[in-house]
Length: 253
Image (tube, rainbow, N blue to C red):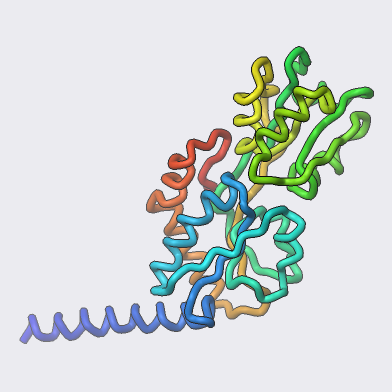
């Protein structure tokens, strides 16, 4: 009798969990699949893809990536119904159009100095006559536009070969230093003999998940729980390690 009651209790518990999962999936992915918006760059989309797959598995739905080639296109996608959740820079998720989770991972923004250019620290970069390259519309562009007072900012578009593009900008002398996320900065430095990373990060990019504005508290809580589980079970760290990213860490909060 006791064994029978235990069996009934377990079955009821599993049925309740499955029902809750189905209810969350129906609101988070109402079309029956999870469309995930992100930016097509390794430090963002490359980490977001396995995180999205994890979330999809937990919800019991297939995942369909919705990738954007540049930060501006990603920003403009909010409230257009093109994705069910987005995973990208918190700063590019408008608070009036989306509800964001806590941070999933954080990315250092670093400077890469051209060969022969000496910058002992990040403060020494903002000087008259210095040309700072960056990615147009990216979080690094936003930070530099806000903070740089004396140096000149040179913007180039995001592309699949952005690290090579950054290295070429430095090699050609069109920029003295390039400011970008570490997923671009370190490969750019490695691609250009004599280039080096300026000590310390000049800012951090915080990456979070986002739901379109107006979803229920239950849906927001469910996504938050799944994001936390992805961090706690090592999904995020393994995604970072698989790409070999430097200056990228799982968020602690």
